[in-house]
Length: 281
Ligand SMILES: NC(=O)c1ccc[n+]([C@@H]2O[C@H](COP(=O)([O-])OP(=O)(O)OC[C@H]3O[C@@H](n4cnc5c(N)ncnc54)[C@H](O)[C@@H]3O)[C@@H](O)[C@H]2O)c1
Image (tube, rainbow, N blue to C red; front, side):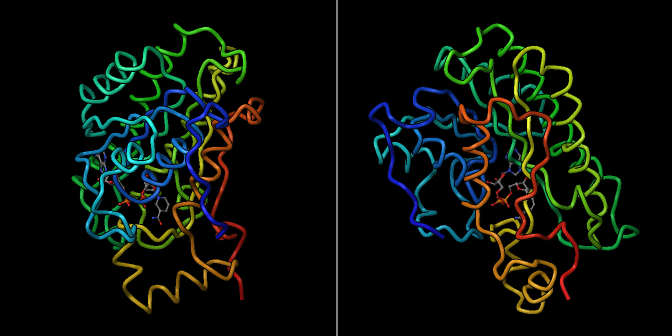
C-alpha cells in the first residue's frame, strides 16, 4: 500500500469544510473512511455503538478513538452514539450533525452486522431480524433522513450535488458465498436500495453509490483472519495476490465523495481484488 497522506486542514483538502457522518466509525473500514475523509478536510461526525475500537481489530492505534485521532491531527471531528438498529437514534444522529455543523454533505452507511459462517438451516429468525434490521432497514432509514436534509440545502457550487451517500454493501450481495445466506440477502438489499434511491433522487442532484468490499482484514472478519485454513480459502477466492485492507475501501469512498465523482450515481462498485470476477484456478 502507498503511504497514507497527511491531514490537510489548510483549505486545500478535496473535501475541505464538507460535513460527513460515518456510521460504524470506531473500527475497521468505518475508521479508515472517517480518517480518510478528515485527511481531505471534511468535518466528520463519527458514529458507532461506542467510541472505542473493537479489541479484535488490527489497527495499531486502536486504543485511541477515531474522533480523537482526527482531533490529534488538527482535524475536526466529534463522536455521537447511534445504534443503527434503532430508528430514533438514527434520526437523532442526522439531527445532531446538522445542529452541530449547520448542514450535511456526506453520509457513509458503513455499520453492519455479520455473524460467523453457518449453513442456512442453522440460521434463526432472530438472526434475520437483526441483520436485516441493521444492514437493511438501518441503511434505508438513515438515507431517508439524510435526503430530507439534502433537499433543504442548495446545490453545492463545487461538488455540483446537494449531498452524497455511500453505502458499504458487500461482494456477498453480488455473488453467492457459502454459509452466509442472510447476511448476503441483507447486503443485496443495500445494493438494490442504492440503485433505486439513486434513481428517485438523481433529479435532486443527490449522488448515491455503494462500495462492495471483498475479504477485508477487520475485527468483523477477525475469526477468519486468525485461522490459517480459512485465510488460505479466502486467498484462493481472491485473484489478486493479497487480501483487502480497510484503506482499499476508504480510498474509493473518498473519490465517490469528491467533486470529480459528480456524474456517478446508482453504482455498486466492487473493491475486492477480483473476488466477484470468478474463482481463480
Ligand atoms: N470485513 C469484511 O471482510 C467485509 C466484507 C464485505 C463487507 N463488509 C462490511 O463492511 C462494513 C464495515 O465492517 P468492518 O469489516 O469494518 O467491521 P468492523 O467490525 O471492523 O467494524 C464495524 C463497526 O460497526 C459497528 N457496529 C456494529 N453494529 C452496529 C450498530 N448496530 N450500530 C452502529 N454501529 C455498529 C461496530 O461497533 C464496529 O465499530 C460492514 O457493513 C460490513 O458488513 C465487511
